[in-house]
Amino acid sequence: MALTPEEAVVGLFERTATTVPAYRKFLGEHGIDAASIVSFADFTKLPLVDKPGYLRRYPLPELCRDGRIGDVIAMSSGSTGEPTPWPRSVADERRTAARFEQIFRDAFRADERKTLAVVCFALGTWVGGLFTLGCVRELATRGYPVTAVAPGNDKTEILRVIRTLAPHFDQVVLLGYPPFLKDVIDTGRAEGVPWADYAIKLVTAGEVFSEEWRTLVARRAGDIDPGTAIASLYGTADGGVLANETPLSVEIRRMLAARPEVAHALFGESRLPTLAQYDPYHRYFEHIDGTLVVSGDSGVPLIRYHIADEGGLIPYRRMLDFLAAHDLRPSVPGFEQPFVFVFGRSHFTVSCYGANVYPENITVGLEQPGISDHITGKFVLEVLETDDRDRALRVTVELAPAATPPDDLDDRIAESVRTELRRLNSEFAHYVPLERQRPRIVLLPHGDPGYFPLGVKHRYTRPARDTRA
Image (tube, helix red, strand yellow):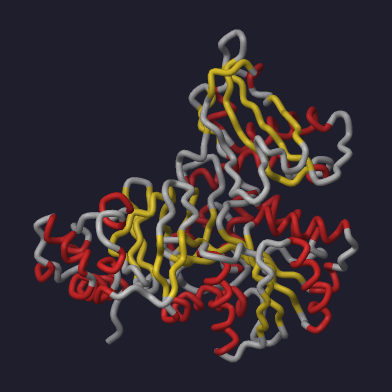
């Protein structure tokens, strides 16, 4: 008889407690006898592990199975602290390749199309580039007609590679961070790259994007199908690739984007999270106090690891029943896998008159016609204090390279952002005084070193400052 996901994760605990020296010590320090954990109910009483209380307390070898470091090490970006090493192995890539396979096969039909996969994540010690390359190559070993090339995040080299190689393939898949891939497509359009001839597909990771962004990029990439040609991975440096968008999850998300009141009822927030499906045998999720906890096998086995991402879990049948109750019925068939939704971390918000304002709300306002052609999509959201000690929302927006924006672009942006904030964010519409709802817009040139330095992971918010706006 096949194990349930709950039984499987208890088995993972038993193997980890037996073979990982640090986890044995961790259990001992909490007075836990590993032999007493025999059921899933016992498992749910185990203490959570995290970076400060577990990963940074023990030597790296002790965090690995049998005290042996894996065959390759990636480093986290350090965006929430000092960089952390993450041992990986070929076995990790084989397991994780199933998430890529689900996208390449079920959305991109790469099992029957010659596919060029262009890895546009940064190459080096960071987790994204080399791990993605390994997973894509694993697909080739499984018989998929997939060829990988890895120019990294060098835009000039990416476009050179595409011009040279794309004509030999049925489709081209770009894999990278959403704003960077948009920049590649926009630059290619300006340079005459015939995207429509290359049947472009996108695999993104690292940031939540709006459905307006998906629609815009799909149009600019040659009028590709936004529902099946753009898919996002939910991954972290510590847990690897945890889940992925599917054609079903994308269709559901696009339905909910058009019905913000239904989305709020489902997710409990005035912003649209990433919505993905996951294999509970590969990564077992729990939802605790509004945040996600994951267990999974990797170079550093993790048992009830608190990844600190805000989000939640929705069983497959419960999702379809909820949608049907609101007269929403997806047309795309899908796997009966559970859904995970992810907002990211709470410090990527600002508070204005008690209303939480999310970067995702601002993004929708920037991706409207008459605006999106003149900007890159990057911005910084701040709350400043005026001379009268009132609070003011300020959005600093990066102009597209060599842009010659219309004189009224700042007014267009301010009005568009206010309109979308009022539509999407009921807190903003009701908490912020009407006369304070129009944001102050600052336009800065591409690559401005103070707000948009090149080659640095972008931050969309800054903490409130006592600065005269």
